[in-house]
Length: 238
Image (cartoon, rainbow, N blue to C red; front, side, top):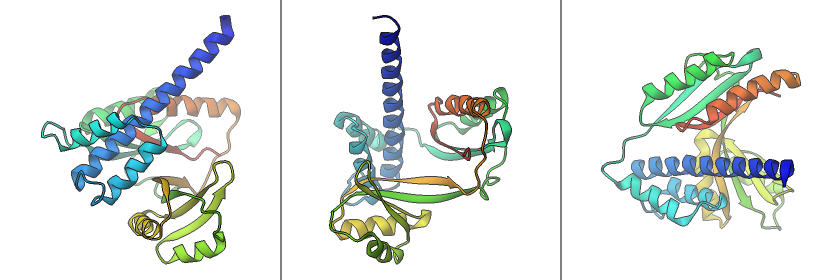
């Protein structure tokens, strides 16, 4: 078996680790959605779309049910959504979204990652000029829709950009962060099947680095992403 087997095994474990991280992230999102609304997806639009995300990620049904049950339990600690912003090596902007039951622990951990790996944690809002917050919907392609005409339809409810991902055959819709609810309502009301929906932070200014510099920044990003409290990490490497 030798090296080839070890390589395949390492990749397999990395994939499982990434899957577990995705399940944890969606699970926390579900807890937040239930706590701020209801445990019934028919009356909780945010929960409804998160359950679609869970299915798209092949999250096991019992894991989803546990997350909903956990959210309604009196013993469940309240999660807080915290955002941390700083600069990594070579001036790369890094924004960290976390969901935590202990912000003191989380900020101490995130600060230590920056400090140990050539970066520095800054103050909230310092990267607002670099990242634009958007919502994104991925819907099944009905096959009979003119995308230009569809884009005009969605402008009234906050849609900004639409394109077909030819690899997945899904239509991707980007809109303003605040348009999430309106876009979801419009798509559901008009019979479009939402496969996935989320929020993204898109850099409007990117930095080009050498391969060695990229490796340094990626080391920091991977360390941050490994933290259990961290949900998403954004950067402006080109």
